[in-house]
Image 1 (cartoon, one colour):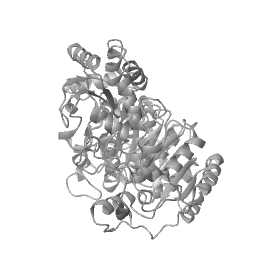
Image 2 (tube, helix red, strand yellow):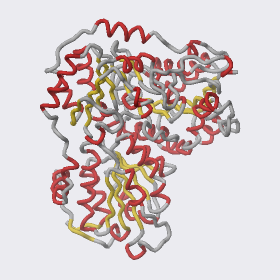
Image 3 (cartoon, one colour):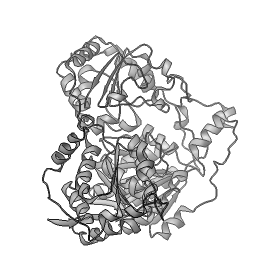
Image 4 (cartoon, rainbow, N blue to C red):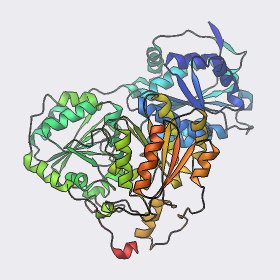
Length: 578
């Protein structure tokens, strides 16, 4: 059948099972928006307050569901407003397809109104990107984009379409397909792209070497990364860890890949990791890294990272092997597949002395979180109370900063894919959009967004989206009237020169909530927080809680930048805190 380019876009989205897209219209993408209007019974479009909110919503949707998230924007500033969201997805290996429309072919390259070379801009932060200048390439390109985004190590793909291609009178023969991925693979193979999409099967010799290392180890530790969740290998990770009786330390991206209450789970590793996780890595004789990229926030001083251990690295992306930390053995392949091969081959072990030592390390805890302030709220209490009320099924999103680290340190996650946060890029303003995407993707589950006042003000315009679509998101603003994380560094390393980190000039979050028709609450101590959070969550409606946290509350443990991860600040002197 012959249809126009805008109709082809819609039909290709339907082929991919897309039910929700996030975006913001504009001149060059109007033709596609006209078709979205006509097909509103087939695809739901969510209008965000800003294009960046759309990109973060698509990202949150993808993280929560494992599907490809989709966002749309027009040319020029519309397209560039997606860039931060695309980069966020790229750093955390999240599959999204961003569709933009550019000026017409005759205007291209002339500095035309709202023209931008968005494929050039996004080249370093996409898994791949396309410029479609001919309608005959449109369906093929969209199918390829979805396949690339979700195959192998996932990532964002951008498709920029010239306005001519979407014109109402530009018709082309379109054949719907029940196997769009096969068509995409066939066309990519012709262009010698297939190799980049082929997931390597684990090499048998690599498997044997890994088994030998594991079986001979007396003090093994697992360093689990976000790849565990991406490959849905949580069950295999648990079975593997229990068989070899091995502690599991988690990166920020993997913080919920194992139940926090499990005796082998030592929670987060790295700069703000637990004492148990950091010491387990330091004193181990074998570090088994699974789906992790050895971020600098994890290894600290690379020359002193796990010096007593051999390193076994399992990753789907061969480029990650030996990139940051030299390995003694490695397996390239999908985490779920690799673990499934290792589990029957490794010997059942107990490692009683090692586990006993790890359990002793678990008892070492920073003193600063034992206090119960009368005129502010302990962030540890906030996390524990939210979990007590919301349970394991609730999704937790964060922005980036102290509140993010407190959530990672204190929230007792019970299920995987419930902790949604920006890891690699550290994007302030991420969580509100992500919460929107998650709420729309999981209508049966609740979302609590834990934010800092500095991050939340960056994209609080998305309250309009939350209110318009009646999304029951509870936003807890851990309000310390400061850019807390930066202020903390200024206190520790910059002589308490608090340059531009004091945020004592509003807004009043209660009044802002009211402006959007959302219920606002304020809590200044634990008793008040208990009351207002319980009421807000049980209401089943959107709410904002202004939760007052002391501006000098610290995130401990802390490893100073560039120091080895065993060099942890566990307690602050009175002189530093004065």
